[in-house]
Amino acid sequence: MSSCSTPACPWPQEWQDALRAEHPAYDPTLSEADHNNGRLPEALRRRPGAVRSRHPDAGFAALGAAAAELMADHPWNDPHGPDSPLARLTAHSGRVLLLGAPLDTMTLLHHAEALADAPGKRFVEYEQPILVAGQRVWRRFHDIDSEDGAFDYSGVVPEGTEPFEAIARDMLAAGIGRQGSVGAADSYLFEAAEVIEFAIAWIEDKLSR
Image (cartoon, rainbow, N blue to C red):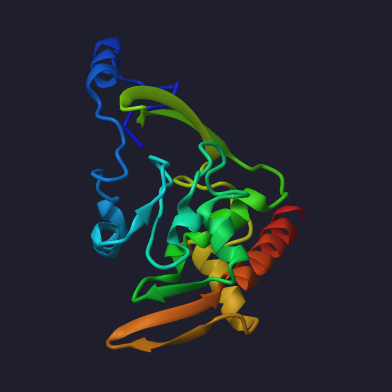
């Protein structure tokens, strides 16, 4: 999201006005994937036949026969929750392959956070410009806090360990998922439905104590 798209923006009003007047709208066709996620998302987005979802901050891209169905009408609010591309991937018996990526990068766990019923869940609201009938329109969005954490895991995760890594390690220890090498890359393969079932139970159990 933009550096200052929240109601608590500390920028001078002049800067906020300039941002609102000039910030380009999210365009699923042209807007690049977040470079912090590595090169593969942008490469996939540019592949012929790729379908990208409409959400400007929690967007996904897909290839294949079910791509359009997975990406269609990505909910503006709660974009990691029910009826999100992550929910549809899970319902379609999808899998998660972490190809040389660390366990703490498993984006599917945000879906588990969105569904989990545990105290202290944190949400954010922010604004982003999108295209509506070809016109740039600012829209407000509501989501779990996927950047700083939907929950405070400090009491249940060892210091220095990322929460998603802790959940994934416990999954592997429970026999969920496989670890191996793809070329020189240490990789992991998980069944999405198993991830969600385990992670929801893990979050609710540990954070509700």
